[in-house]
Amino acid sequence: MRKEQHHKGWNESKTNDSWAIFKIMGEFVNGYEKLSRIGPCVSIFGSARTKPEDKYYKLTERVANKIVDHGYGVITGGGPGIMEAGNKGAHLGGGTSVGLNIDLPFEQHDNPYIDHDKSLDFDYFFVRKVMFVKYSQGFVVMPGGFGTLDELFEAITLIQTNKIEKFPIILVGTEFWEGLFEWVKTTLLDKFNNISPKDMDLIHLVDTEDEVIDILDAWYKEYGFSPNF
Image (cartoon, rainbow, N blue to C red; front, side, top):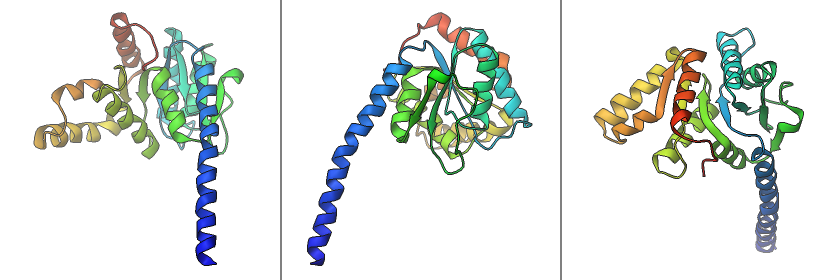
């Protein structure tokens, strides 16, 4: 009897896995249809825990405002903290403000600064991450936690391995990022030779909104706008 119950549970799991494919497909189709219409955008990443009085919240607002002022839209993860600041700066600047929302334990709501027709909800992290990578013309990475690091290193890996087209990856906040940046250079590159010197060219380390926009504008004077794969 116990063996029969075990097999039954296993078979039910396989059936549920099969039907989940249609839900995953639906998320991809909905994301592709909506994001393919919004035009060139820059994604802003960072901590959901950053408060409005924090200097990086305020800096993110200015960065996003500058980005839309130069003709790009802004995409964020749709939640609070740095994501809210990014959408707020884009919204107040009169630009495109996109939110790719996902339900997480400490992020129970989307922020109010997302354009009503550009708020997308995802159940699957991997589908959401595809949307960021496919439709972003650049990543602006503010101080954050594991999720921010995940997005950062996945983008670097995809570019490094030629799975997607190159786009600028801009780390904002020298005091936050310089330790990691230095470790990548001295340990991964110089000491262990686990990356190539040209891989360091993928990353820009800056402190101001003007530096962010200078990098984006310089890049797209040379390269055209298009989806990344």
